[in-house]
Length: 337
Image (cartoon, rainbow, N blue to C red; front, side, top):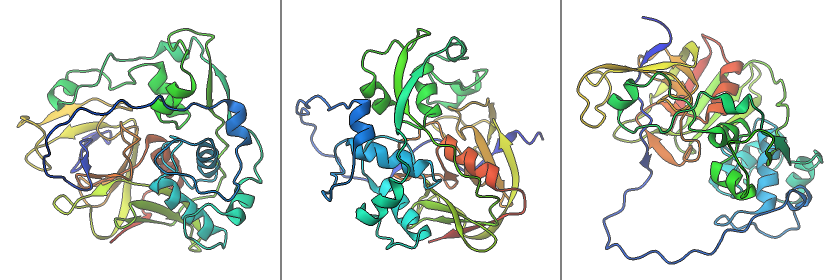
């Protein structure tokens, strides 16, 4: 079997951390229009001691997310919220820099982060090359319909560019309300991503279910990189103990085998699902020596670290690609509670 043909225990389906009892449906209140920001507001945002609310987008939160992303302390998707993934990335950054690892933005950690004073958002011009695709009109939820497709591509230039710049597509469209995503020459505001540091190869990877996080460590135990991760649930858990990286596959396809792994919908027959960034395992697969389990990308970056998988460790596509460049077959992967 080709290395690009994977049969996995995990799936792209998402399960929230907590289930809630059904409640009567009431009409949702009319929501106020979301505040947007100029590039000048975001680039000038600075910590003044005030707490950033986690339930509203904030210019400083965008700046913090871009700065953390550039240091391989990933906040996951850049969405403008000072949420749990940002707090976890901050705690890891603080730990690596000898600060109190409480996950809170304070004057000391801000002084270190803001030493990088370059703009965190800038202007990008959509090119003819960007518009070539290939794109697909939609990604079906049903695996049998996915299997009929040639490639699980992006659904448009907006989704492709959001992923390229590590951004939540809702934030990207909020910052660019008048953008024509189908026209070359359109100028858009995007995250000014940094050239991530060359921290060398990882000797060990740890996946924590308790914190929904993944850490890459050097041979000396130094923390090289941190990523939020989606892990398995109690009923469909991730592996336990210590394993080894067995194979790394870019642009993987997916072998659905309901008799071995799980049953998706009404699909009872094995099938081959084509590759693509919107596929069940995203743009890269890091397979483990435990059959059908691995670390991989995802079609939906926003829920990473906030939901459960069917057993595998799921990262954003860009974080999975960064990790794939740091590991090689034989690297130890430890799963912790």
